[in-house]
Length: 236
Image (cartoon, rainbow, N blue to C red):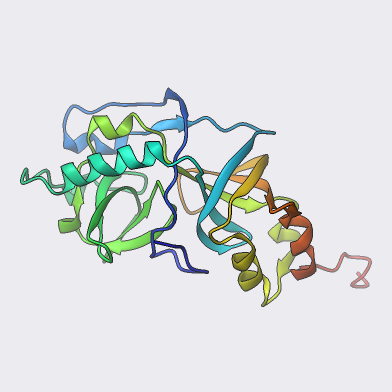
């Protein structure tokens, strides 16, 4: 399975990570699923990580997945065992809210994956935390996540290219295609330079420098960036 530009409905490359201390693992019954959290990612400023891009929406929003796939393979195996079991461990709609954790069935490959609720309106939107892809689903395709699956941190993390602020400019029409071609299915090194809170998801977003085949992607993408005029340039 490979990622596609601007498409967060396809699960991408497989790969994993290492975690630090657990944040909060509380589960007395399924109605407490809003309290559940995975182990935190062990990511810090200045750290350089070997990754693949697992979901690419653009230079300001893409997910990286750890290049070592052993932990993800273990997670996937447990997800399928639980998801395909005859035990009806259904999720109650009243317990779901943005940030709730669950297992979700991905319709395109009929496989179960760890997920987090993004929104709950006419349909339920989830993000697959080990890949970064988003999809719409329904209550029948969700199950409660087991304590065993909470022991592993998410295997993907949300990124944006460092040095580009939305308040200071914008990407031109060629940016997405060029960025996708640079990153897709290639081994990458990312260095964490800053961290922000994401407005859409209850998770951090890391500003990173990306290296691909000795190319600094941040520098290359400057040709696709259009800076906003300053007050002096606009004559104000």
